[in-house]
Image 1 (spheres, helix red, strand yellow):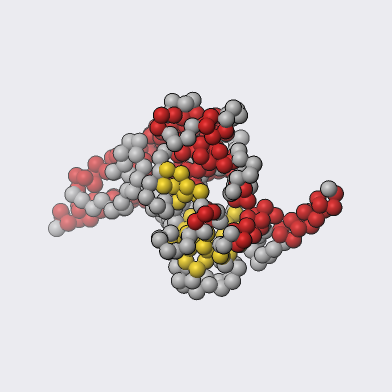
Image 2 (image 1 turned 60 degrees about the vertical axis):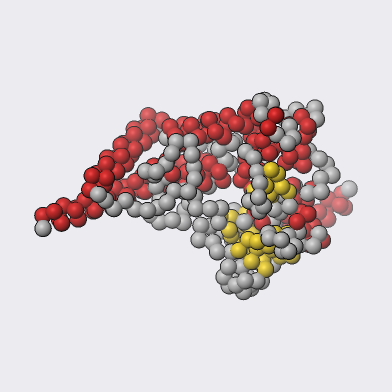
Length: 362
């Protein structure tokens, strides 16, 4: 036993010093075991798992890759799929795999993030919900994410489900927070590869989001699995990303647990967009309002009202508690982005009004 432990620690030390060109770069023993498993099962890849300079886990190239070359191939039999239903209703299928000691997906399941490393609207900490500082965002969390998880956990949706929680784990007892974690993990790590199915794909689901990404994902018939091809020439050690969709910071926070830090200036939050519909997130087109004049004035008044209400709410709430520093930091950044986006749009609209006034004088 002692020799085995020493061997494991030595192997892990080797993994931790791998890929030194990037700050905070390392791969754990379990992550390397998963890569070896994928390769044994017929997978192909020119990447590895590591961390970027901020310490965030991701996927990085192990060699120079030309545009169009295969980066990753994951065989179909390593993909875990559930019906395309609300995540809370599909989660028992993942729960069963997590509670099956000899699951065929064992090497993959063992590298999934733990409860403290997953954040979505489903498991958003109760203490922080009010610091979203918007009635519509709070309602989205409480009435959509949280309520559906709770009702499913309590068995109220059993008649809609392919597998219930008791069918998945028998008489084993789990808590609601743990079930929310499983639901959050399923909802934040799935791809839509086939009609009416959501799929978790080993290795591919470790790729981080970049809205500018142009890498090509393909799971069509004859592709031998799920393939990712390079959308551009890439250098060894470069991070491989995908896009999770054209989402705004409030959407990204509730569905994936992070913000859009690339777009500058930041876009209006979905809840602040003039076409937002209550209790709905979706594709909102960034088509700038340009007229007529009365519409511009009405939009200015609407955004000023939103901003004033937001600032008053923050003043009433007081400082964000630092119980969970990562989440507290995200919320502060979300607040800053919201202010900046509204001020930027107000300035743009005010310039339009000045142009209208100048043309009227002529």
